[in-house]
Structures are given as structure tokens and as C-alpha cells.
Length: 411
Image 1 (cartoon, rainbow, N blue to C red):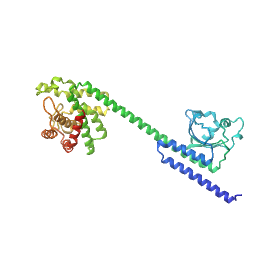
Image 2 (cartoon, helix red, strand yellow):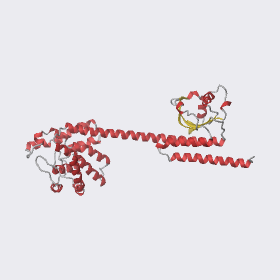
Image 3 (cartoon, rainbow, N blue to C red):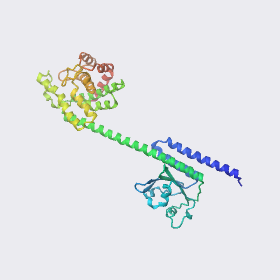
């Protein structure tokens, strides 16, 4: 027979084991990823079930707004029937005594279900589940009860010491904090997922808009069409180079914007007759008026879209590129005569790329230049380009030439 000293030692050892178990479980919650949270809770309930030698451990949420409760997590010992699927949207008023006990911040402890009065509503719920003993510990957030953690004994009766009940009360409160943290983080993750989906939908819509506008623009000549793809690819590359050089305005959003907007730089050529657009000889003064007017027409087309979507970054950039990509750094370009940094950055980029591509390809009025000859010709265009951007263009001209060749072959 154990002495009182041995009994006390054993009791302290059991308390230490329980304390260590609960601390370990809670520490794991702190480091659990959102995707693994349910698995972690299920594992924790299983460890608690094995420690207390019970048959079922579960978590319920109280939804006082809708006056129902839900079984959200459950572990069952081997051979024990799971009840979670049957315990969803359970009306709270079915067990007023039970709920009132928890709302008061107290544990529902039933050492022996058979001792409950014959007409007890609690007994009527527990006996069909073959529950012999039960402990249901409220999960408290301050003075507010949010749910409970339950322990069912089916095979045999189970009693709990005051220390065990208090320790489980502390654990339940901490578990509630972990569950709430998971809900908040999961909600944030879901919001981010929805936002990412909407951003993708917007990009898809914008790219579809680009394709539609290009089809409507009647740019029928194949070489001109290929020019559009090359300007897109080279402008995107050059914007990325600016980003790598820490240009303050070259953000990831700017790069994506110019990728979508650059193909629309010549959208205004919808107004230019083929007889002028494809003319092999030098244009007359009147024909040049028609040709130069394409920037105004392109600006008007995109201005109408901008008025419909005034906050759309891509449409704003496309409008600037279409209207200003024939402006010159020295102010002698057309059609606004803007000068220096009054010309939007995206338009200054496309100006350089547009000229380079035009020099490198066959046009009705000229043969294709080599990369070296194109660079020499551009160097002679004094006052045409932003000198800082052009210097960077020259610094990375090998990358530009490689991208040109790749895009030329691809299209």
C-alpha cells in the first residue's frame, strides 16, 4: 500500500506530465502553418485522448448569433463511432443547462451519466452515444464563451482531479486563441488569394483589350504587325533594365504596364490610308500631315477608354505612349512639342525602341540596318532621346540586339 508521501509524489509526477504535454501542444500551435493547422489540432486531440485514456475528444464552436453550435474537430479511439457529422448546426436551446454552465465560465463535469436524473435533457443526449462520463471545458475569451473542448468516456467511466480540470481550462482558453489566430490568418490568406485572382482577371482583361484594339486598328501589313511585338518585348526589357538600375519610377507595376501598353503605341494608324502607310517613296508634305496625325487619333481612342476607367494604370500609360511617343527630348517632336521630362517616361522609352526597330527592319522606303548601323544612326539624332535613357540603352545594347533577333525570328 502506497504511503501518503508516495501518493503525493505520484500526484506531482502526473501533474508534471500533464503540464509538459499541454505546454508542448500549445508551443506547436505557435509554429504551425495555416495549411497544417487542422492536422495539428487533430494530433493534439489524439494525444490528449491517449493521456486521459478517453474515447473521444472534440471541439465545439458556439454561434450565439444564429443560436447554434458546431462540432469543428474530433478524435475518436479505435472502435468508437465518430459523431462530428451528426453534430452540425445543433440548436443551442436543446441543452440550456449545458450552455448556461459554459457561459458562466464553468466546466460541465459528469463523472457518471447514469447518475443524472431520468428526465435530464443532458442524459437524453449522452446516453444514445453510450457516453458514461463527460468533461466539457469552456473556451473563454475574457468573460465570453466561444465554445468548448469535450472529453467522452464510452468504454468505462473516468474521473478528473481539480488540477486536471483547471489545467484543461487553461489549455482550452489557449486553444481558442490559436483557433482564432488561424481563422484570421486563413481569412487573410483567402483575401489575398481572391485579390490575386482578381488581379489576374484584370491582366487577362487588359491583354484581351490590347488584342481587340490591335485587331480593330486594321494593321494589316505583316511587317508592321511584327513591329508591334518587337516594340512590346524590347520596351519591357528596357523597363526591366531601368528597374535593375534602381530608376525610381521603374517599378514592377511599371514594367507590367509597359508590357501591356507598348503594343498600342501606333493604334492611331487606324486613320492612315494604306496608300500612305505602305508607300515605297518619300511622303509628300500633305501625306506627312496624315501620318503624323496618328498620334492624335491614338490619343483620342485611348482617352475615351481612360474616361471610362480613370483609375486604370495600364490605360493611362497606353494613352501617354500613343500620344507622346513621337515627342523629342529637345521639344521639336510632334504633336504637342513636349520637352525633356515633361514627356512621360513610358513614352520616352518607346521612342527609343520604336526608332531602333524601325531602323533594324525593312520598310517600304528603306532597307534593314544592321545593329551597328542603327546605333550609329541613332547617335546622330541629336536631341531626339532622353540622354540618360539613351546612355543606358547603349550600355545594354548587346541585350537589346539579342532580344531583337529572338523576337524577329519568333514572329
